[in-house]
Amino acid sequence: MTESLPACTVARYLALRLAELGITHLFGVPGNHLGPFLTALRAEGDVEWVGTPTEGGAGQAADAYARIHGVGAAAVTYSVGAFNLLGACGGAYVEQIPIVAVNACPPYEQWQNYRAVGLLTSHMSPRAESNLDVYRQVTVDAQVISNPGLAPAQIDSALTACLSERRPVYLEVMEDLWDEPCPEPAEPIVRRERPFSARNQPMLENAVHAVLTLIEEHPGPDGRPRPIVWAGEEIDRYRLGGQLTDLVEATGVPFCTTVGAKAVVDEDLPQFHGVYNGRASHPDVYGVFKEWATCRIGLGAWSTSKNLGGEQSVGTDWVMAAHGGVSVGTSYFPDVQLAHLLPALQDALVKEYGSGGLASDYYAESYSHRGAPAGRPAGLAQYRASLNLDGTRSRGGEHLTYDGLFDRINHFLGEETREDWTVVSDAAFALIGSMNLALPAGGFLSQISWLSIGWSVGAATGAALAPERDGARPMVFVGDGSFQETCQEISTHTRLGLPSVVFVLDNGHFYGIEQMLVNPAYYAEHSTAEPDFYNVLHPWHYDRLAAVFAGEDTPATGVAIAHAAELDALLARLADPHDPVNAGPLLVRVRLHRHDYPRAMAYKVPKTS
Image 1: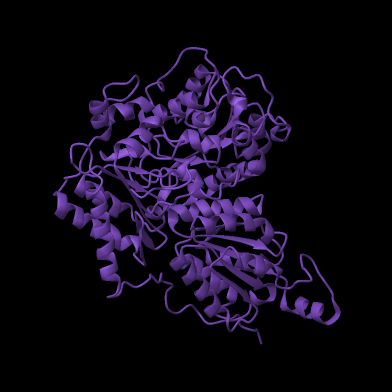
Image 2: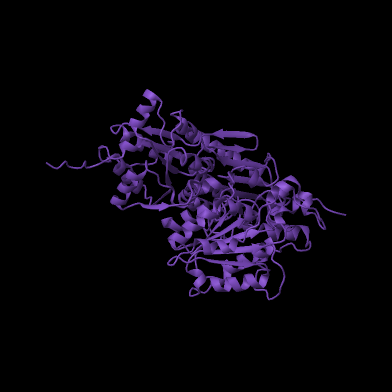
């Protein structure tokens, strides 16, 4: 008599639940403990396994995938794999990215052997809860599944927490449980939002009234209100881009975004005044945001050191609505959810000032009021034009600079290419340089708080595979030191045939941002100083790695550029769909001078006499 297979197993249950969440790709590095699950995953056919060279790269891909899709997943094997994935989960926890981390662990029998006779097998630790304990620090729910009868409830609980809290969860599953029978999935997994009850209504109304009072108490010299909105990360995390667009279009209020919320809505909106990044902002953006606007309304914005770029705090003329509450000046209103605040604030502003009553061009107003200092834009249109004024084709042989590169890329993205691109920016100078690119909604990804160097290379994989950005090509900007951390992930781009373009910013093989943070005098004009010894990197021929990763049927191309004319020629090839450089990933080594840096960091560099 042939033994019949169970209708559902723990492995199949988890596979079905991941597919239910709309997850199309699972990233990870396999191991023997994980094998039975991956076999079941393929048999179901809804979720594709994407093997990556490193667990960290799998986590980065899952992170970017989740930023676009709403939830992502990575799977690894016990201890040696799980601890490598931990850093990516830490970043996702800080930045509120929902990731399902699956860790396949040794079977129940081996744990019993250890308890009885002290026998340790591969990847085991004498501390049986070592993996669980560390993941409890970077997840909102962490479960060890050792009983197939309890598996459905544990899996459902974790996935519900992942969606509801918008942060990572951890599922540790013993190897011998994958093929054990369990019930089929029943009720669907749904997000459980914090309820809006009767007691929340007066708190919401009081918060909105306080915002209007702050605006009234901070008029411009002509007596008119002069607020500016600072849209932030939670607009993206809570999928509130539509509500933000409704608010600015109904009221006309000018707005900037944080770097972390760049391109959360279309940057062609007439109310968009740029990306505010504290003292690291474009000087014109800083002028209208901090000096011309008389009060600032942060909506979903996080007051991180990166978003405030050199500033240590916000002031009493600020509103900060984030983390489930609203601070207005020195007053605080707890348990006011952003999804309720946006429409309530919109209605109140329209009632107070009329439809479109806050519409202003702060660039034109400040220009008119202050006169015409050299280089100041006469209006918003002139400011936007100035971002790519120098980005048109150059026939000169001038050496590339950070600013010259991004000015030229800005012109290419806006005027020369017909393709859809997702810009994925790494930390440091790459992020500072790319924050002023003019992009459509959904066209920019960065890790703004955790700032794990090299994040962008693995993240580009997830960005390319997310269904919502299907067909969009990843354009990565990454420093040379950052790239050395995660260069293996180009292998995944090549294996999958992703037509990514990875610009490796090679500033003479050293950590430029670390030098700027520790000893900015190195960048002073006419400085001949050498960088601090610990910031110096071993030099690589980055472009030659393309040949290492390329296969007979999986092309990859590498080029090195150092001058503006070479960049022009390369961008012309990118705009030609028939050029072979577009058949797979393109690795571009951009050779920059060591003493060069993005103009936005000039505030840190001491002046010389």
